[in-house]
Amino acid sequence: MQYDYARIFWELIRKPFEHTEMIWGIVPLYFSWAMGELSGAKASFKTAIQTGFNLLWAGAQWIWQYTQTPGAGGRLDLSVLFAVNVIVTAITVVLGAVALWSGIRRRFPKYCSFLGHARFSSYLTITLFPIQANFLKWSWDRLVAILLFAIPTWLVLGLIQYGLRASRAVGRK
Image (cartoon, rainbow, N blue to C red; front, side, top):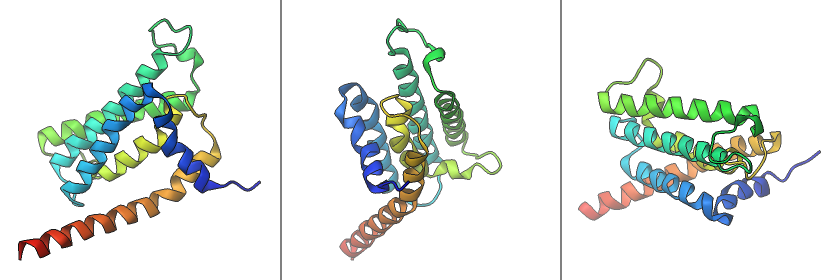
């Protein structure tokens, strides 16, 4: 079985904009990503705060989506959820809290300095958003598409960031 991973990836990016209730959750994640790209490639405590907000926002949006399932009556109804969604949401919220706390304290826990990079959290929350919000189902082909496009996306964004820095340096001279 052969999958069109570019089409699958595009579906993950496009899907949140097809539903009004998802736009309010996804736009702040894109904004956070853009601000993270402007702040620099080096891990910093300022970026850790941003990463924490990004992850907590995504987790809160996913939890809100879970309460909106038919028959839930505004309550969190875990019986209708696929177990992976709950695990991913819990990990997202915990990592968000650790990142936010690290940024506020200005100290990363051991092996957690990756939380000082907004690109990491932004890419994952944006690509996982339609799956976690139950507008798309978890599947191996979607997971492979997310992983396949991670490095090219990060490289392109790195090149854009490098170009912006170079043009600012030329403008200062």
